[in-house]
Length: 42
Image (cartoon, rainbow, N blue to C red; front, side, top):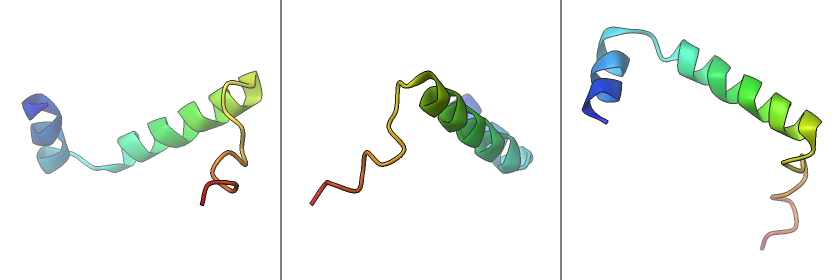
């Protein structure tokens, strides 16, 4: 975790953002995640 925090303080946060968006697109396209999963909660 410490290495991750050092990366964030010295580098840009954008690679992490791109990684999360890409991972989400891949998981939704594979059917692992539902794009509307959070809508029924609450």
